[in-house]
Image 1 (cartoon, rainbow, N blue to C red):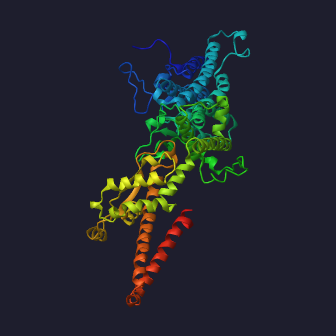
Image 2: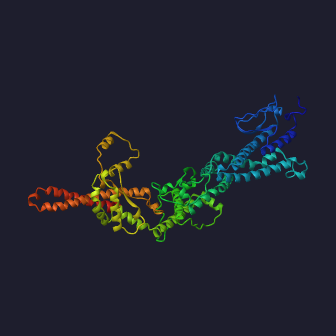
Image 3: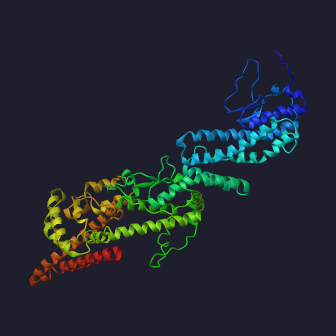
Length: 567
């Protein structure tokens, strides 16, 4: 059926402008018109509304564009087409940004930081819609001078001129959405910082806008960081923070040491959510911080990165709270905006983390020394694992030497444990570790154990198979080691499983060396009887010399190991 009205291209320029002015204002609010159409995606093709009617859209990428030439009935005015082509990207960016904001605000799994960013952009969209509504109101008013913009009729050129700030702002927001889409947490903040530094480094207005968005969406991350640095706790239900607490008992203040459970395993770092400003802070110069003795503590932690300091600070406070039944630490009240600015400034962030680290470490160290007797526990380790005093070693071997001289399958572990308990009762001071100490026997020699530790990926070669075939059965004194049934918290922070493993290896080395020394001293006693026999004295002199050199070597080796290396 033929239309009763003429095509748009056949009308005068003034009429074309009025029609297209109404369409462009609608497009600025995301609404399609007859001549300005929106294509959601490149793959999606527009279906014709009626048979024989061409509803295709002339566009190279998703967004607003002109309808087909058949819709216009020819070519419209070139100046109008030029102005419209400059305004249409604004409409495209608005729809793109509004779609992201709406979808993110309705999906909690996007994370708190992404939703905070969307709330900040939503306020900018509200200001933009208020501007467009004002344009719509003016376009619908009569042509009287009292109801128009500055007394002049609203034209397409005026819309373009007044929309210039919005065009720029919406283009930046579209770039922001493209950059942060599919990201959350620290990864989102890093992408925004990179966008600002790489794409808009010399643009003052763009930097101001991006800094505003960064400050807003960094506030939740700053709250998490402050909570971690001050209390060792963080509420992160969507996995946006750089630290993840992996151990349930550590998270719920019920910490008990487990066999093989490391202090470092209680929480882990998530590299994708570590802030760029935190990495940049490693290159900053930190102001020296002295303690009560005037010692520069920054030198002691100069090898630690800001990330590792932040990681350790939260663990220290969590350990303190676990020991003090969740006692709350007084926090200085500060505005979210100030916290966000500190978070985005590498130097201020580094100083904040450094202060929190020293405060937490001093508090934990004072608690361990004065409330949990750390020094007495370390003296216990030195006495029994490093064999610092000979009274325990002599008393223990006087009773257990015969049993330890047997081959490992024939050693009665219960009997050795009884001698150990008896020797501890005679020689130990009051220590919470004494009741938990027990003896164990390893299946591998010390040399084989160290070889396994030295190889990251042990592989069985032909030589190793030969060694297995000719490997002898260990004696009790070669396989004995000490371990703890459990180490009470918070002493397990210092005496962790890995540290106890090192103590155990050193004990096996020193115990074996002192056991050999004890055998050589016993041989010296036997040699004194042979010296009395003048007929055998000259024949046994090489044996006496060898025994003397062996004893001299083993005594010097023990001294070197205990004093020159360990001490």
